[in-house]
Amino acid sequence: MTKVLIARRMTAGVEARAKTEFDAVVRMETAPMSEDEMVAALCDYDVVMMSLGDHFTADIFAKAGANLRCKLLANFGVGFNHIDVSAAKAAGVAVTNTPGAVTDATADIALTLMLMTARRAGEGERSVRAGAWEGWHPVQFLGTHMSGRHVGILGMGRIGQAIARRCHFGFGMEVSYVARSDKELNFPATRCRDVQSLAARVDFLVVAVPGGADTQHLINTDVFESMKNTGFLINIARGEVVDEIALIHALESKKIAGAGLDVYEFEPKVPETLRRRENVTLLPHLGTAAEEVRNDMGHMALDNVAAFIIGQALPNRVS
Image (tube, rainbow, N blue to C red):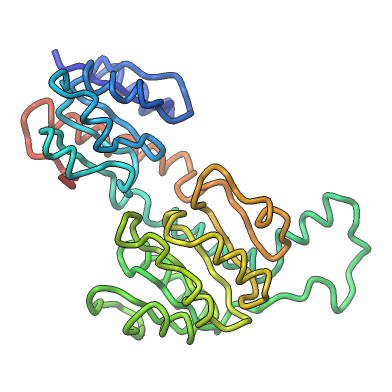
């Protein structure tokens, strides 16, 4: 019998299906697995459904060694930079993800961050909650009007395109982007040659690239130096794409006007310097945090499990 481990608490519907259809063991934790737990999971189960924070590195596969039993890591999430895919492949472990299910929810969070940061919504709410608001007047909390501005999308995949559509059709924004190739879009958009040229021309720079070695610190001092001092950085991708030290310096030196972040370089640790800045919007990785979205993600991951068990091609295989 195929043994299946669900490594995190899931929504009720996903947990019920996992137990009914696969007799899965559900680890009743919200925190990531420890190294010992990951090694044990590889040795004791045929399938492990895991997620962000569960760092299946080459070292973890090596520690499992000859006792490795697992043949599928069914990742709960579209990003899989927390898995050493090459090491998994060498160990004979397939890897799947959940693309598509996260697109609209993540794009919505990008727009939330853009609006909150530009319009100083977080700062205003904190003022109201603290009892410090003195009432309306013509120059209180003056922010940046987002409509008609210029947005730059770094990474024009599913999520990047969903953000760009919202910006163009919802807010009449000019769209520019950086991607590996030209994109066929149903709205006007200009492709830039590199990140710095994109950063130099836009009012909002939105990061929507995958994580991993190729994109680590892609947003760095050079990029911040290229940005307008009225510009905003928005990151809904992976925390390590942005050099946090360079970001803090850009904010402190007023090289940029503000930032909206849903992810962090050393998540869940967030530097105090960022936490105390009024011109930074900080969200606790809410990109896909809607119940129906997490349901869809969970069932997509379980569809990969089901295909594996009956020997069919994996719907969302990445390795």
